[in-house]
Image (cartoon, rainbow, N blue to C red; front, side):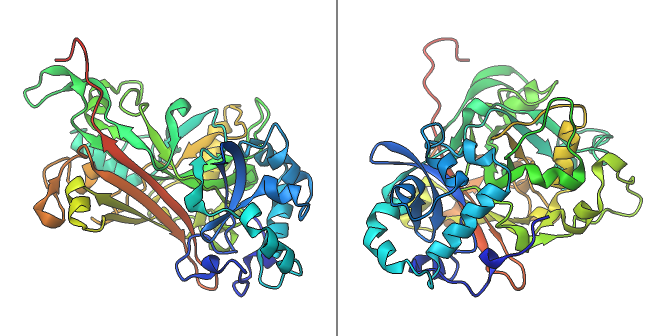
Length: 445
């Protein structure tokens, strides 16, 4: 576990005033990494308030040096963060420390920085965000007991909770090629599904849903055949982002035998900023307690460090905005408020289980937490749960209701880490708007 240091100092403030604003997602204690396009060129940077530290411009100005900055700005690493993420944690940590000092109010270089501000600190509103890293593999877990059990009941299973659930973190291998950065349209997919009369149809998916998740991004991988133990698993995590694992439930529930396929692989959205493991150190809490009578965790998924600090104090929310609401000027409606503590398994346990058979993780691999649903009604983290599988339509402002997402609906996910004595930090937004399916020329039923 990472020790607290001066970059976490709750008294530290930035000369970038937007970073000091109450409720800012990106105060100086955060400094998440991302990738963007500026003047047609792919760049990497760090968020601070409403601005971005352009790492290539910073290197050109010779204000900071070091191996980590070189990894972000060399020809091979200037467009994504993979080269930086692959370094030993001490290197990105050194860059974080240098940036924290440079951006603090008491930096001795303030005059020079003010002169170069337009060059090295573009506004977020003036750039286009990109995927922060190349994602080679994507694994999505199923780690909320409440989400899993509810869906089992919706499907009419005699045993709603799979027998393996309390023994290991269940997961499936997702489709990395369709992961896209926040902010774009989400095209309604076509697929096969069973209609209300029980007939199998092919056409635009009628039951489209969101899934509120957090994802870990792997920094340094492991050698093939070399498992990662739970006590050291977080040493392999570079950081975290929001994940919306969009789901065409009508397709998924008809096709799923080996696991999710076309009902999931059409689009997954991630927030653009990676909040580092080091930034989250002040928000580490004990792993969620297990209920009396649950099986004991097997040794390879257990460690004193994970029991003590395997959880993170993060609250997550989902907002829904319909086309009619936007036309009327009605703000988005918060429909979900949940906490990472609603997961049954920690990220360290997910990594340890993933690699326990000798599977090797690689830099940039993305591991989704699974839908973070809790027991309460407001903590249900997808529409299927919020509506009890369509039996209780979600009530929205203006008299609208939803049992599934309709064309024009926009989902925005947000999250914030908070803990007594620490400056709260956020993850930004993960946003997507549903647009109509492409017209089929032939064969649609």
